[in-house]
Length: 124
Image (tube, rainbow, N blue to C red; front, side, top):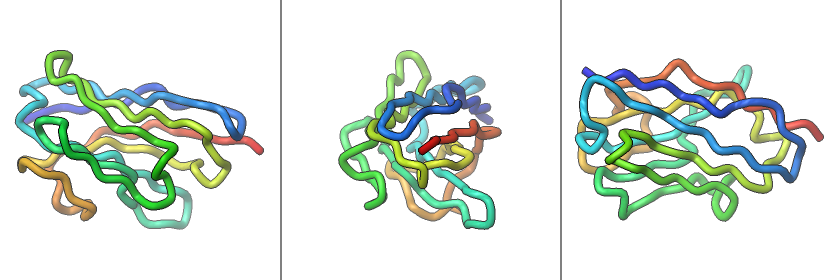
């Protein structure tokens, strides 16, 4: 069992930057591939970025490619999402999720553990 806690969300102006963190407790994070998802009101939860267990393979949704960077520090049991050049359409509740697999997935149901989410609001 692993517990995930996101932090770092908030209000940011368009074009600005934000870094989200996801801290794990209970088990070592290196056991899991990790994903960052987001869900805006009235929309389905969708994958933003994923990173494999060792951190050498990443995946990004087209909407964030070139602007967001996912990384992990297994020694600190933490995963990050660096968000640059944010846009109003990035406004959503952001979740981190852990998957008991070497590779991430774009399918939410493939993940075993979820954090409670952190709100990101981008003003225009």
